[in-house]
Length: 163
View 1 (cartoon, rainbow, N blue to C red):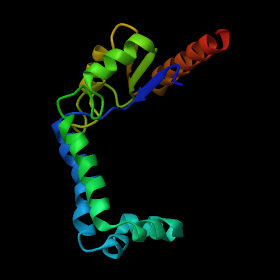
View 2: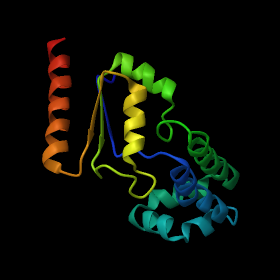
View 3: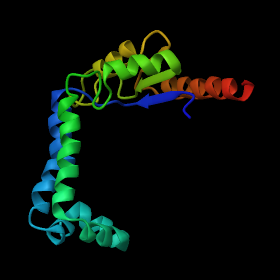
């Protein structure tokens, strides 16, 4: 059971929805069309399989259509949430959570649009959707955001212990 929510360096917007979906999901789905051994020969999956033999065993046991469906569904989740405050975080869910949990939102890249994915505007949109109980910190300065995060965790922990 969650008693507080700390959301750090959130991702949002069309550039993130398209770029992340392609980088982590649809690109690998395309390779897997050639079979799971083709996927396991690719850098990311080859590295994981070399580090842990169960990765290769698990992927070889998975039918390529199931892998493709999972990758495409994951990319679709990102694409479908491109207009939400952050990827995978619908405004309605954030409002509901904000009414039941203390929420801390932090962008430690600081103010600005940066890479177009981890933007201050995304953090602001999430905080606005979560409502008045949400604490927002946007700062590159670790001396600002880390104590604010520690204070949030301390408050939430004290509330849990007092209950």
